[in-house]
Length: 305
Image (cartoon, rainbow, N blue to C red; front, side, top):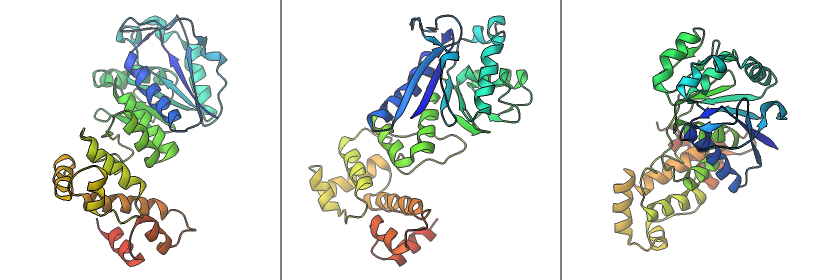
């Protein structure tokens, strides 16, 4: 079973920790087999908001394997600049050794400084909170620090910007592991209807057009995602959510900026593109599974930009 190990610093930014942890908790609710573990590497951690965590096991007791994840959340800036932090050489060495074993090391916010001290940012694209970008580049001149992104994956290392960007990072990790459909379900459960993109992956249609709070439109969108092969006429969809066809068409366009048919076509196109990666599927089979009447219609849609 895959593991995600959070290594909590003495003065942790609460949302840097709780945001990604909640994403993975929601993923488990949706059936993902995953273990989350929490460790400390120094004093008993206390959040910058004053919330304590009690005694945790030391990171050296973690039993991780290739493909598992280590996440280092952000910490108080005074601590990042302190001698005690820079003196955590054994911890930094452990991070480097873990990475060398194929364990994926990630940071949120100023957690990137721990990765820098571990030597993991050399010739690696990375980011951190916008207030700390300049300092990160100055301390680690061989790092390729990018200022204007939310997260980035480079050389098997994930780094993200500050605070809420940890949620975006965790969703990106989920999409890499489980695909966009699963990630959509997790984001929906977290009421994250519009996932913000990093630099390495474009936004997914499964999360686009969700930046609204209309429950009937969300219900229609969820239904369409799960029933692409059906006819999905506007009258049936409207009846399902207790609206007239005319009213659903108006509200859907108002809330999403696109029509029901345009949205359905985009969903079908993306799912077809994913299925095309399987050489065992014929174009006719893909067309039928995605709700296209003929293979020729699918080919015509795929050619459109």
